[in-house]
Amino acid sequence: MLFGKIDYINLAPFHVYLKQNIKNSQLKQSIEYKKSFPSDINRKFKRRKIDAAFISSIESRRGNFRSLDAGIIATKEVKSVLVKQGKYKADSHSATSNALAKILKIDGEIIIGDKALKLYLENSDAYTDLAKLWYEKHNLPFVFARFCVVKNYNFYKKLIQNFLKTKKKIPRYILSRYSKKTDISREDIEAYLKLISYNIDAKSTKSLKLFLKETR
Image (cartoon, rainbow, N blue to C red; front, side, top):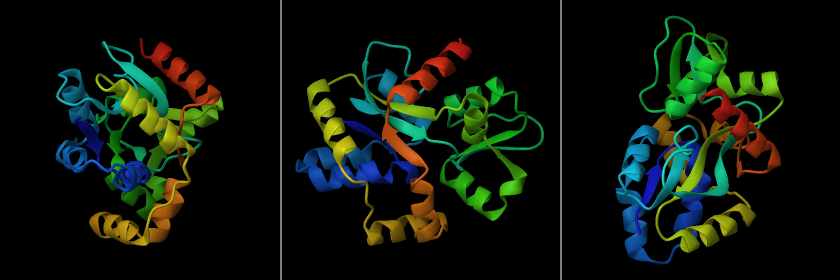
């Protein structure tokens, strides 16, 4: 089984859960091996080079695969999907964020991920938070990605169901590792993770359908 790992802070709780609950050493190795940025994971998933992954929302509507009620969801604001004022420049790592900026009619440079979070924490006034803007417009959370499967569906379904039931807690040594890697404090990482949810509930489903409708 090959899982596609997006090694951003927003998925740290899921990766911690995998390490603590997956006993198969071969699967653990494959999870580490198949890690990349969102758009590359999307490509690998479409080519069946990985069995399952958190797929960019705009890409998750197409193809012969199944999705589960889990994703990367900003409840109100996110601080890691931004637009810097200026000339439009897409982020090659995220099709969903690029599409969201166009829908919201925001021009500028799109920046995502841990790099974006660090920039926002340094000077929030210089950036527009796209999830916050979506929430202000629709009073809905925004679904940036959802968990999709092409193989071993029953295994991943059980895995996701159990993950959604667990309390999301990151050990201090892992927080320290992310802090060192990103140059973001542990306290800021913990505060950031409180902005993220993973359960695609009724409101998230409504938001996702609205987004996909507007991007057709």
